[in-house]
Length: 177
Image (cartoon, rainbow, N blue to C red; front, side, top):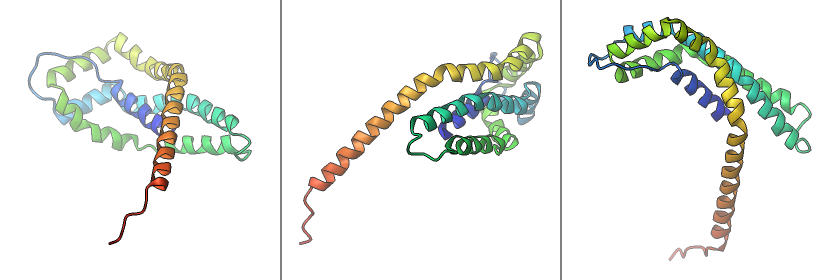
């Protein structure tokens, strides 16, 4: 679940990077800050995470139901608290500031200006308003696929681990001579 939350944060950061021009002057930190301001990047990240918490809670519910015989009765409440705490303690401003040089590295001043123009227009503003819900719905749609994949990977890891431990038990101890 932590990796899903981390993926959600990365998607929230990446969701606001579109547009390009042929300009070759690298964007400055100030250009990127202006872009972040026009795209409401901080608020966008918060709204996206808030919208994605519902599918994460659903996943916690399903996991607790699946293993309810082995888990305490308050399993779901405890997992939900952990998820909520992770979202609430996410250092949004610090994370955004860490990405400023990355954006400046990959985008030119012309790119940033074009993105600002797009996100200043009504369609860009609509995209910004709808993006958290789009991300949440997308995550909910992808959740069954992700769950199957995670379960398959976990089963394979368990098989590999079991094979390694069986192999280690059969291997004779090395001579100390």
